[in-house]
Image (cartoon, rainbow, N blue to C red; front, side, top):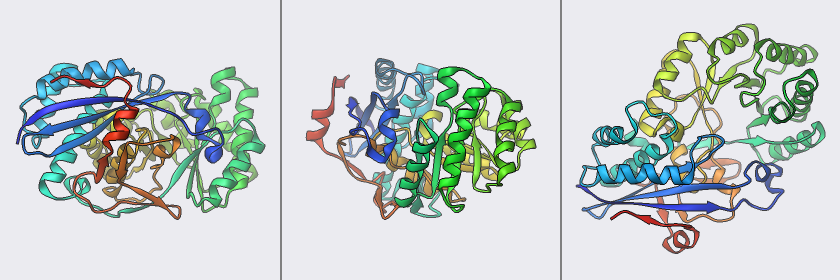
Length: 389
């Protein structure tokens, strides 16, 4: 089997009208993604997704397309079942230790997994070692400008059966700067969220690196916990992603878990997190680390070190969320997974894949990723189709 063509389809995604789940629409002012399709001489094709996010992944649509063009040239004629060789060829374009190019590499990696699953007649999670489960509890994010609106939103999400909430507590500090006043505003929103949900619902207080000062982070959580200890609370990425010593300081002084997200850039970065004792759990994004293969390496490191692994939506379509579900199936410890990103947008060119119903996600046992493309919708949603053959 040989690769005969790699196509890229840039999509502009329209967020649903304001008010969906009372949160996500305000967080996604304009999102785009690139769908990759790899064709082979056997008639089997594989699908991948490269999310373009300048704020989070430091990658533009044109940047992704340039990288994919380079990868396509070197992958022409390659064996799609030899993923090691495929990554070796991509190294010639972006280096052996790439930084802001991982979404493009991850899209290729995902499409190659899809091809292999179809060729072997098994779901992708079996290629990754097998499934502990194919049904998942769900996590979602909560954004709000005030304690009252945060409490109302959290109550709504609990009624929708979410078992874990990622409460965003960094927007005020980012816009107004680090001060006692802005930190109090973030703390008040978090307290409102904790009071609004039952203890059986996990709350990850996600500062998105904005709190910056380790002692301030400890003080905020101590003040909250002195009034009432919340065993369901975790603190996510309060400091800069390189400040592993600061996160270790926080972890040693708090009785709640510390979660790292933006710090998890590669298997090598994960080793440093373990060495510093900086995390109790991580948020793993396969597209940020270069694909499912690298993500599984990180998950194995975490399992050996006793560190939990959560999965968070960042790909923006049903394809990307289904890939997240395949990865979630391979994780030994069952944390609620964020698999709903495709619902943030008005349309999708895909069918099949992960299903969300009754407050849970269900992954069917279908060869490959189990996602099919709707050619008509794909053409309608593509803004500048690229075909380098």
